[in-house]
Length: 245
Length: 189
View 1 (tube, one colour):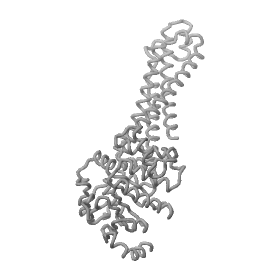
View 2: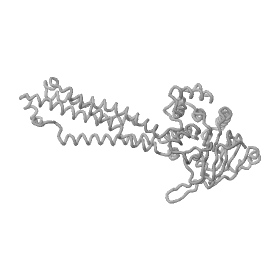
View 3: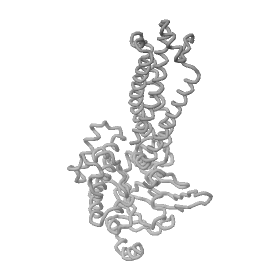
View 4: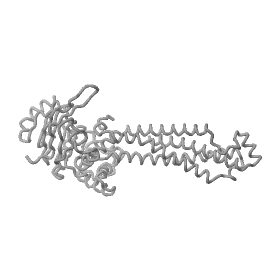
């Protein structure tokens, strides 16, 4: 396996809910190689989102470390984390999270301005990326004026505009119908080739899993099973049976 | 929609402030004319023609209360606007926005609202004060209009309005910016 881009080392996370302690993650170890397409599967409440937040520098582990490109996220202050998220990570959300009052182009451009680009540069780059995701005819539309699939395309363009290392996609097809979901998966794969990004997704969608190089199944805050592409085909049948139920 | 509430708040409080200040300026100018007929008219209206200034403690208290209400109103509407946009703020932070950017964008918004609201309020208050005093002391006000003093009062009111709009929004903006994106994104809309 190629050298790893993201190292997750003995990560635990404990939340306090009132006087109850909830152990969301109990010792996760995982290595994600550069350029991989990783799917993380697990029932809701299994710690998927928590693990996501750790990789994206949105939350710190209670113990253990997340290391991205040799950099311990624990050592960064809040401005450095903002810089890290801006340049290294592209987020894609289940509910798209576009700014409703801004056009498609502005939604993408704002992420670019956080990287220090001028307004004109940002708008130019935004138009370029939107063209790559097939939305060059929707630049001036508001999110509410386009379909769900197109909104997710805007979000993908926004995630890519700063040429990040990693795309973190939390159930990107969760709010989309099957056909549109498949289009989004294809697009992500295409962008992975074009931009050389590493993609980490959380998903229930078997189609997304079959597109991925690595599948991690999480249960009760720990990795239950870690499968490479070649091992996956064998097990998909059983996973399918379990996850659909 | 929120901004209408904020602006209205500032307009009303500033109109009141400007009205009081300008009225005091005009009355003082009339007192200084020391015209015997006018002095009788002024005394009938309860003006103390021997006082050095026409601002008494009661007036100051009323102005203070109006400004305080305005500050609370602006802070409240800012807080609402921030709460409505929690998810948006969280998303922007995920995209790499620094806390500074969030605070700045709210301050720009409230500065514009403050400037606009204060300008409208001040002009409104000034117009009403001039109209009211002209009606009470016909023939005297425009001939001895204390332009310089009134202008100073208007500028001072503008400054107060702007200050209130900005000061009242700093805390809500900072609170919103400091929220961790994880918590902000978890909020359901």
